[in-house]
Length: 576
Image (cartoon, rainbow, N blue to C red; front, side, top):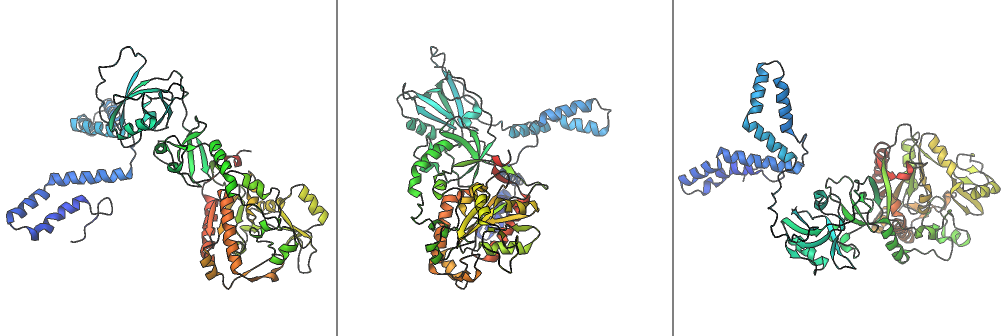
């Protein structure tokens, strides 16, 4: 069969198929009259016109067009009235005649009906057999298409009656304005529901199509009208309502992934918020667990996934620190390389659920956002930082660490290190001037807050690598950090790509470099898993360092977008 031009999708358009069909069937037609019949039927102009209209409608349906205006009839009438008062000319007379034609008026009327979506089914008349004594009863008819009604029900524990528990924002019930929270449900399509469980009523509703009749007793309590939510949150966990035994209605739930931005539509219920995905054109909201409810649930489960520190205080930093990493023999005799103001146990006690966020785009006069790089030892953080610095020394900068050790002959104060006395270092520790600090071979080393400010003050992007549990203390209005997690590839790829590479045990002792061992690879993978599990909710971007050049290019693209595009940040960063 010869190639045909395509229609609105990847398949051949219906019009092209019909036009080509007679020629394709010609070898199979036994009689000439059969062929003539086929040519006559498929060559009919009216059929072609209908098919073309069908394809156009199908195309525009996929495009989901929005009407430019919804009242073309009124606009045409206003135009005609205005033209009547203008000096007559041939063009004006022709336009007035055109606007007065019945077919043009009908076309504009159809346009308005479609634009206003005023083409739903006409509801049947109200039933005559309404009990007149039940003067408080309302009979409501809603048209149910493929979408859910957008309401949940429950049985009142005291009275046993079925009541409307919540109305989903943007759903069919909400748009109708006829059903409210607290309304008592008596009948559905003439079926009494007093003796039925909520699950049975939901089953009746799910099987109903078209117009559904409800008999309800309105709630006495007046509902406070809710404004559409302008609150946005970033999710710190994955959620699937189908796996949540506590959700009142799985069908009404909204699934999301860690990192998704959600728009909160209602917080009327302390346990179940109503939300939708940011940017979703569908106005209907779905149920998600509230922040308080989810925190409570996760706090109960949390002890099962805590990574308990070893008895030795130095173990926790062995996988997390790369700038001044201890060799294995050093770890037996020295203190932990880095101590933070907060302990690991404090960090794992945090229960990440949601964070309120808002869009932020850096303005020309704003300082650059602090860029924090996180990753396990040996993953290639220092190499990536070095490549970034070399790519543009005027644009990127790194902090100069403090130390109490003596300056060596080839070193300059303020270049390799800022050399200070032990007394002054300990005073700065007490005054919380260090982001991180630690002790190595009886000398202190640390990264100060002022060293970060110094880089940013030079109108440079500050590249900082820290332990992951330090990240939370940098998340301030001043720094607005963007956190990038450098993740190792699979252990098979590590063996393949780093077989000839070396790992540096200490930044202060470059001669301590040694080849990677299998234990190094396993420790790198395990450390990365712990980081992602405990601190992944704080990461804005994850880059797998499988190939250094590819990872660097991805990092560079991320930096470029960070300086030009809008990103979601905590609302606290924009309000002092």
